[in-house]
Image 1: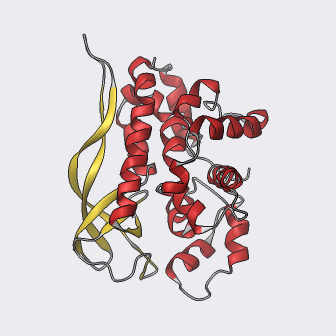
Image 2 (image 1 turned 180 degrees about the horizontal axis):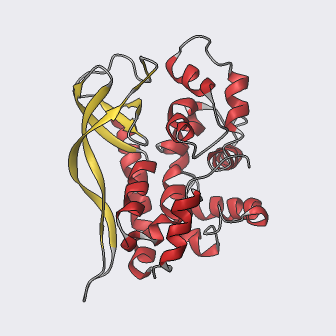
Image 3 (image 1 turned 90 degrees about the horizontal axis):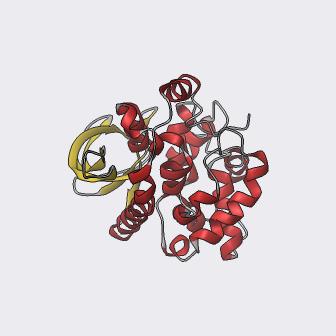
Length: 271
């Protein structure tokens, strides 16, 4: 499961060690299938996702951060992750990472504790800088939409792609008498990938089933319960960040230009 969700950003060079073919092998079951120990070693080199899983596992008393309950809780949400006190998790994350924060964790401060949650949605929508740059142009919104875990219903299965339907993020900039808002917009139809080396990450998909989409790639089949948890996780995060979005002051343009140029917005590797 970790390999399924981590592959897309890893293949783009955003997270984890480069050249992680083992993620594809594990996600598709293609020979040779990566050993559990190999995936665990790779997962530890995701300096974004790994601390969340490790701390979440510790808080709920599960020894293995790659236990399916922990992995599911982080990526798409579940009852286990929802039961964790967000502020307590945020304080623990801040205490462990603040000494080594640097630019990657620069926005992880005490001010973010009201938004904190042990989930990918918190990392993308709060810790990454892009929610603070939404009125600078289309790139920040596009990155947030691509990086979050989205849910969608399959409308057509093609040889190498899927046609899916699901909501996308929508940003409305402040005008006189209104505040800026980031919300889920109406359903849209789009085409996404789901195969690597002719092998699907999700086998036997049928029209009407739900999938998780990460960086325009359908990486997992979702049950109705899992869709509900992902919707709840996403809506919680959007609501929690709403006051900050409403009062965000946009940094100067050179800052965004530097982030776009260097990739600091997404790097989570072991450098």
